[in-house]
Length: 199
Ligand SMILES: *[C@@H]1O[C@H](CO)[C@@H](O)[C@H](O)[C@H]1NC(C)=O
Ligand SMILES: *[C@@H]1O[C@H](CO)[C@@H](O)[C@H](O)[C@H]1NC(C)=O
Ligand SMILES: *[C@@H]1O[C@H](CO)[C@@H](O)[C@H](O)[C@H]1NC(C)=O
Ligand SMILES: [Cu+2]
Picture 1: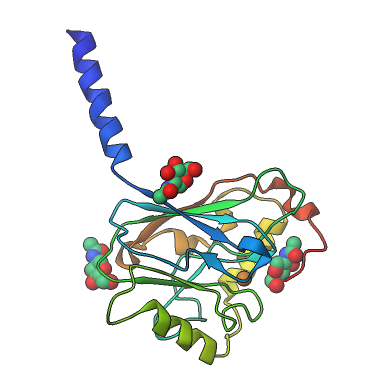
Picture 2: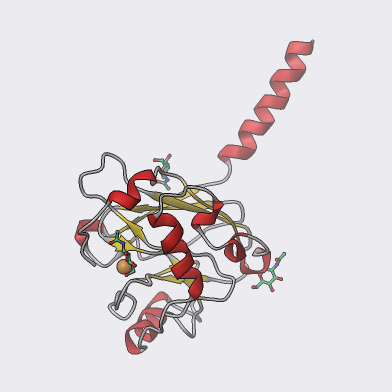
C-alpha cells in the first residue's frame, strides 16, 4: 500500500508539470535581426517561454506598448547575450509567465535593432496588435539603455552564471508584470573569451 500511495503522489506531480507549455523562440535566426516567431498567442499562466540565442549579440528586454524601445522599469531583461558561432551549444534564457491578463512586450536593446523591427510580443490583442507595436518601434528612436543593462553586460562578460547575471530588480517583485523566474539555462562561462562578434 505504501507503494500505491507513492505512485499516486508522483503521478499528480508529473501531471502538473506537463500541463505547463514551454514555448520556444529563436533570437537571431539566420543571422537576422529577428525573433522567430515574432509573437506568441495563447500563452497561459504557468507557461514558460524559452529564448534560444543563435547569432550575434542580442537581448530580450521587456518594454511597454507605448514605448517599444525603452526598457520597462522593473521589467525582465536577458541582458546582452553574445553567441560564439563555434560553440556547440547556444545560450538560452527562460521566463515563466505568471499573469496573462495583459499582453507583454519586448525588444532587443542592441544598437538600432529595435528601430529596425526587432520586437516581440506575448498575447497581443485586437486592440494592441503586434503590427501596431512594430510600427511604433520603427518610428521611435531607441533610447539609451538603462543602467540595469550595463550591469548585466558587465557581470556576463566576466563569466558569472549566478543570479547577478540579470538585475535583481528584474528578478523579484514582478507579479504585477506577469513574469517571474528569469533564468539563464546554458553555460556562459566562456563569454569573457568571446571576441570579434558583430552587432
Ligand atoms: C520547446 O522545446 C522543448 C525542448 O526542445 C520541447 O520539448 C517543446 O516541445 C518545445 N515546445 C514547442 C511548443 O514546440
Ligand atoms: C495581472 O496583471 C494585471 C494587468 O497588468 C494587473 O492589473 C493584475 O493586478 C495582475 N494580477 C496579479 C495577481 O498580479
Ligand atoms: C554585446 O553588445 C554590448 C552592447 O553593445 C557590448 O557592450 C558587449 O561588449 C557586446 N559583447 C560582445 C562579446 O561583443
Ligand atoms: Cu538584436
